[in-house]
Length: 342
Image 1 (cartoon, rainbow, N blue to C red):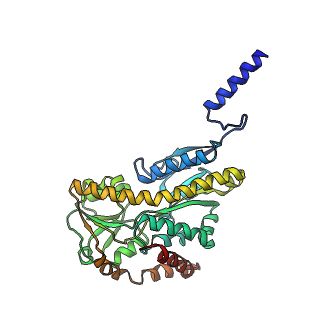
Image 2: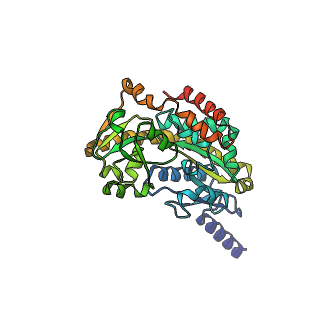
Image 3: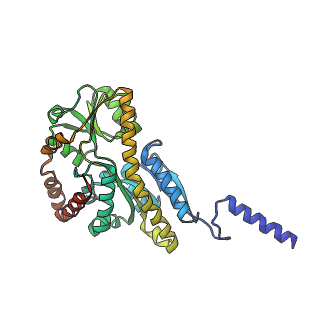
């Protein structure tokens, strides 16, 4: 009897040490999370917070192994990694999958300014639009969470940009796709290079600046090179998502699903606020470092928005030519923007 009691206590201690759930004999659900973001990037910190919330709201019945910095695959593979089950969850750059998630790319259009606005708009659009959700479902994934950065601004090394005319002819790194089209509306010469190659490209003069968010500037150390920056432009927001493998999701019990959804909803509210807070903090830090920031006053908003008039028609035409309901999805998006964006 004493021997049995000793063995029982030993097993319980071993289970606790292994992070098993409170229910004795029940193994934790172990999942892999793949991320393209470098350590130090705000989205890296968001992933860690998100994972902690999932652990919390599933009572540690779920244990997630986190693989940042493209350890499981390149950024352009994140959707497929999750689709194929290489990872159970993935952080997916929406714009990297413009061909696979074309309707979701509506969330980067210049009809909001802050991340708080953009994240709420995209989240409500996901809930409203079956067409949006189906794009993920087609690849065997389910979208759990979406967010956007603030709309991008213009950073330069030599020439300050204080009005649209100042941007004409500048060679600027963009994120490609619609970001190129937005840049071209201002007669900017867009250059498509990977984010990790931007620092060297600025050093070598391949580009004269960037169209980027403040947190990304910090993450890639571009504040060491840039001298001028704008604040409050609408050069495209960056939408992102967290997806889960659908087959894996269906294996979860209802209480596990509810815990993951609760974590996802809570994290969604936090992400937009977090992006905007860091944007504000970094603007002050950059100014202390010597970067001159031109904040767009309300009186100049119309001047900056004039070149973008009709930009949505280009996006609609692009997605409708492949047989997708671009106008319907854009109208849903615009209606939500008018309710939320200032």
